[in-house]
Length: 191
Image: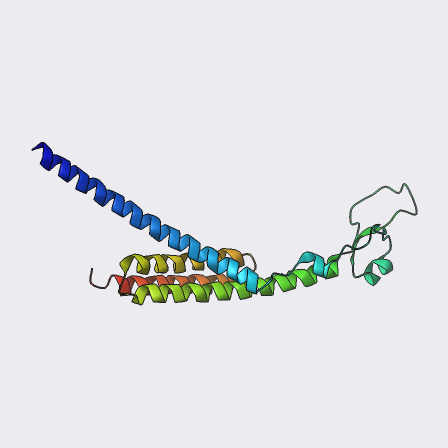
């Protein structure tokens, strides 16, 4: 009786270890595939650098105290709109944001970069989901690729979410929901 119980106990623990190993492999594939997508993308498609748009080459930054000087260096003049007692008649009536134009150019380039990265990650995620959905030979890899594709959608959306307009956000969510429902119908149509 003891031998039967021991064999049963061994088989039970082996089955439990096998499930843990399978899930560990699935999670590992999901994470590493998404890391691969993101690092390969960052290697092939460089993000805009702030210093490229707003180089800080001057060792001493000159104080700009007039609107005309501010505009000539590409800045934005901001009036002081609050009450300030007149202590010095020569005091500036505002301040200059000297990096306004270059920062605006950088933010525009960054938005385009974020949009392109979003589209690329969504396409890579869709390919992963499609391959995972139609792969019939290995359920472990099929499941891992499908989950990696879904994670790629999430990562892409999180990276682009702050730059996207509200309409784009709704479209992103609708597409993601549609793909998830489609995958569920394909994978589990017999259940």
